[in-house]
Structure formats: C-alpha cells, structure tokens
Image (cartoon, rainbow, N blue to C red; front, side, top):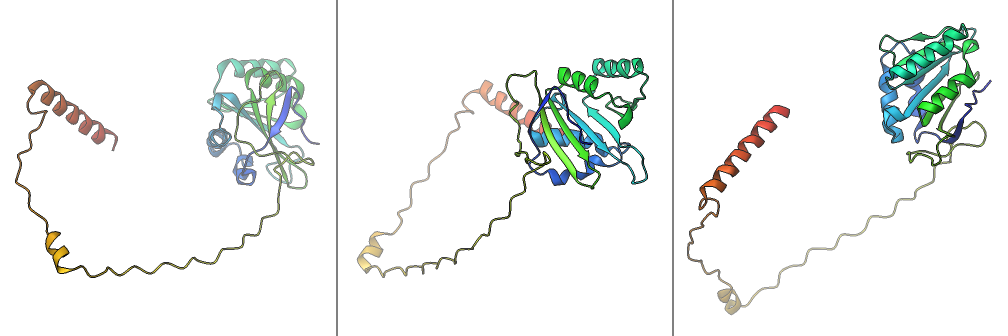
Length: 235
C-alpha cells in the first residue's frame, strides 16, 4: 500500500531521483543523515524546511516495512513526536542525537505524524520502496502554505508519482567546420619598413602616489599583511 501524506500536496520530485538509492539503505549508517542534507541542497531548500520520510524493508525476510523520519535537529518537534507515540502506546526509536526516528509500518500514526510534519516543515521528501522493488520519490508541500516553495524539482508522473521518463533525443553531430587558412603577410615596401621603425622613448621616473603620503603607505602595508595572514590561516 502506498503512503499518501495528508496535509501535503505533491509538487514534484528530484531532478535525478535514481541517484538517491543510498537514502533507502540502513538508517543506522551515517549516510542517511548526510544524504538528508545533500537532498535538501539538491532541492534548493534549507535543512530546517525539509523532512525526509523513508519507507522500506531492510531485508526481503522482514514482515513489515520500516518508516524512518529524518529531519533537522529540533527539540520541540522531537518532544511532540515522543509524546504522541507514547500516548498511543506505539514504539518509536530515536537516534542518539535525535535527528531521525524509526517505527514499524503497523505502528505508524499516519495522520497525526503528517499533521505534526505539516505544522513544522513546509516540505516533505517521501522515498517509498514498493513491493516490486521500485521506488516512489516525491516532494510534497504543506497545504497550510499559500505559495509553493521555489525548489529545483522535476515533474511527477501520473502513474506512481515518480520521475517522468522521456526517451533520449537523438543528436546528430554537425560536420566540423573547415578552418580558414592563415593569410600570408604581404611584403612591405622598403620605404614603409624604414618609416615603421620603433623610436625609443626617453626613460621616465615613475612616482608612487602612495609613497608621497606616509599614513596611506602604512595603511596599505598593514592591509597587505592582514591579507597574508588570512590566506595563510585558511590555506
């Protein structure tokens, strides 16, 4: 059964959704949290505006799928989630730094969780593994927001809500352009060659405007030293 996030409207998917397979791997790996930040960057959203919901089986022998929620560290949101699942007697395991939590799909409080997510995060990235092994990756916007966020999205397909697949266009390469031959210089008359001789200029002594003002010179030197220290510090 596909997850249908209430209080959210589907607005698109990631431009390169096939590259996000690593986000559905074991959530105990650090790549899930790092992938959350990279997914936010790929969408053009700030991490505190996005929540990632992953639904998958860790192995084919698992009876139920596991739902993992990855989000920006927020103490108030974490406490609200803990109180919600504790009041209903549902298990909800948190990571040590409370940046993601997980629960079996039968224990997932869909409407209540989506309500909390919509009140806190304007965007929801849902990655759901289906029984046939395919993935459904969609980006949702909270229905409480009047304007859709300006994110870098690809359009959703009508069937699964995944990325639209279009046949690759055939590109016919153009024939290379012939390069023009270099023009040979015309021979110059002897009179023109004699007139075109370079006349040396008189040597001139250049004066520095900075050297005429001791205060300005000291300021330039101090600024240059500060620049060298900054470059040495961050290089």
